[in-house]
Each structure stands twice: as C-alpha cells, then as structure tokens.
Amino acid sequence: MTFGESIKACFSKYAAFDGRAVRSEFWWFALFTFLVSAGAGMVSQTLSGLFSLAVLLPSLAVGARRLHDIDKSGWWLLLWFLPLIGWIILLVWAAQEGREPNRFGSAETPAA
Image (tube, rainbow, N blue to C red; front, side, top):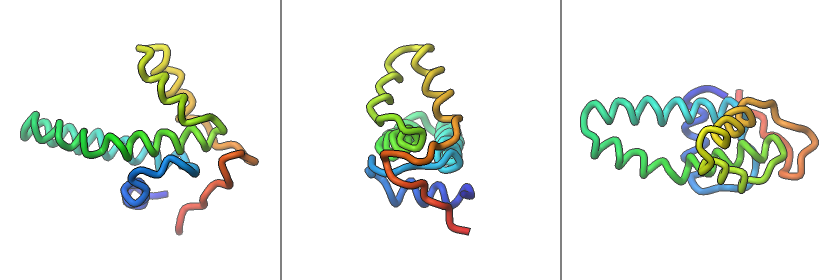
C-alpha cells in the first residue's frame, strides 16, 4: 500500500474499528500524522493541536485495525496508558506481520 492509498484508506474508514489494517497502512498514516503535525506546529501550536484532535479518531481506528491484523483485540490500545512498557509492547506489535487465518477476517490486499 502506498503513502497516498494509506491516507485515503484511513480517512475513508474514519471511525471503522472493525476489520484489519496491514503494516504499511498503519505506518504510512503514522508518518503522515507526524509530518503534518510537525509542520503545523512550526506555523502555530493551535493549528497543530487542532490537527491532532482531527486525526485522533482515525488514528485510534487504524491502531485497532492494526492490532486485529495480528489477531489481538483493539482494547489492547489501552496499553498506551502504561508509560514506556506499554508503548514498547504496542510498537513491537505494530511491527509484526499479520496472522492468517484470523478471527477478524481476511487481510485486505492493497489495490495495485
């Protein structure tokens, strides 16, 4: 999945917490949010805050779908509230390959 396809997929599934997200979809969207937030922060902290608020729900949704891809419940995102240890666990899980077969459905193949 390319950078543009990931952004489009994440915004089209703005609040979809069901299904799965492949690694490229998750990481490209994470890069997009980081770059835009950093750029907006150079212009105005308020603008950066508004952007972060606007992408909060799609970020949570793609995170839950990413966890579904490795056959874990989206509720594991609550590990984010455990400083350092929870963050490391989520980072490692986000880097893992998806698992087949999976109780959350089949992996969506990215459009060519």
